[in-house]
Length: 248
Length: 353
Image (cartoon, each protein chain N blue to C red):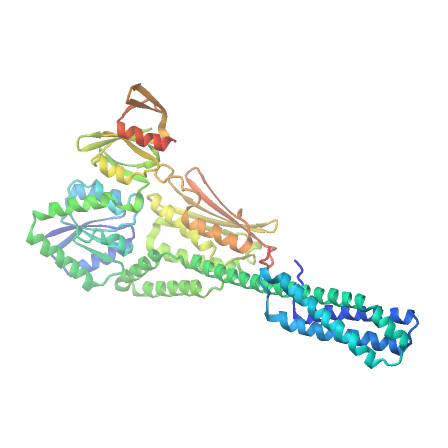
C-alpha cells in the first residue's frame, strides 16, 4: 500500500486526483492539503510514498515547499504551470502532469512511479537531492527566501537581508528580525541574489550594499565594512575591488 | 493645426490669380498711356497666354521631378533662360499681331528689358512655388502615412495588452471542469457555459469603443463566478456599483486585469478567506473604480511600482486618454487598493492631442 498526499490549493483539482486514484487501489490518500504549509506538515508527519504537488499556491509555492522538506518523497507535479518552466524538473520528479489531464495520462504517471519504486529505492535519494538543488535555483521567486525556523516557516524578503555568513554546510542569514539558518551554500546565494544589490565581500560573507555605512581601512590592504546595524564585517582583497566598483 | 490642401488644383488657382492680376496691370498701364482699348487688351492677353503656357510646362515638369539640393540654382538659371525665351517670343510675335501702330512698336522695343525682367520674375516665382508646393505635399503625405502607421501600431499594442489573459486561468478552469464532469455534470455544464461566454466576450471586443460599466461588470462577474468555483469558499467578493454609474463608459476589459491582479495577490499572498472589494462612483466627470484585496506586507515585497498587470493597464489608459495619472495604487493596513479614473467627457476618435 502506498500512502499519497495531495497538495493543491484548488479543491476541485485535488478531487480529480482522488477520483483518478480510485482506479489504483494500492494507493491510499492520506491527506489533501490546501497550501504549502499544510503540505510540509503533512509530509513530515506521515512520510508519504508519493506526493502530488501543485506549484502556484498561497504564500509559498511548490518549489519553495520542497526546499524545506528534509527527506522529500517521490514527487509528481500536477500543475497548469508553464511547461517550459517545469521541464527543468522533468528528470528529477517522477513525472509532471499538465492540467487538465486525463485518466490515461495519470495512469502513466502512476505506472512510472511504481516502476521506479521497485527498480531502485536507493537511487531515489539522489534524485530528490537533485530535485532540491533545481528547486533552489528556481527563478520563480527570487525576491525572497523561505526558511524553516524550528516549526515555523519564515519568508525573508531579499531586500531585508543585511548579510549572509557562511557556517559549515549552512548559511546564517542576518535580518532586522534576527538570524536564520538555511542549508544552502554561499555559492548558491551568490547566484540567487541580485548582483546589483549584493556583493560577496569575503569567502564567508555576502553583504547587502544598502546596509553598508562605511568602509574602513585597518591597515594597508585590510578593510572592514561597517553596517547600519553596527556590525563589522571583514573584506577580502578581491571583495574590496568589487566593493569599490559597486560603491562608485 | 489647419493645413493647406496641397493639391494641383489649388496650385493652379493660385498661379491663375497671379497671372490674372498681372494681366490687369498690363492692360490698365497701356490704357493709361493712351493706347487704344483693343491694342491694350491684345497685348495683355497675349502676355498672359504666354505665361499660362509657360506655367503649365513648369507644372508638368515639377509635378514628378524634385530638383536635388545641388541643382537648385541651375534650375533657377534654366528657368530664367526659359523666361527670356518667352519674352523674346512676345517681342517677335506681338508686332505681327498688332500691325501699323508705330507708337506701340516703339514702346515694345523700349520696354523689352522690363518685360524680360517681369517674365523672369514670374517664371522664377512659379518654379519656386511649384518646388515648395510639391515638397510640402509630399511631406504631408508622409506625415499622414506615419500617423496611420502609428495608429496601426497602437491598435496592435492594445490588442496585445488585452490578450495577456492568464493562460493559468484558462487551464485551471478547464481542470476544474474536468473535476466536475465526474461528480457534478450539471455544474460542469454551467461552468463550461460561463467560461465560453467569458472567452467569447474577451475575443469579440473591439478596441476604441467604450462600453457601459454595466456591460463590463457582467464580464467581471462571469470571471468571478469561475474563480469562486475554483477556489471554493476561500474567495468572497463585495461589489458595490453606484446606481448613477451603470451607464458610465470605460474601455472594454480594462477592469479585468485589475480584478485578476487583486485575486492573484489576495489568494496567493494570504491563507484563509479572502474578500475582494470593488466599488464605483461617478463624480466630476470621472468614473472612479476601486478594487481592494488583502495582502501581507511582511512577505510580499512592496510591489515594485504597480506590478506587471497594472502597468499594462496604465499603458492602455495612456494610449486611450493620453494621461499618465489615471491609475493609482496604494498599500494600507494589509490592504492593497487600486483606483482607476476614467474621464467621461472624452471625445472618441480625437487622438491628435
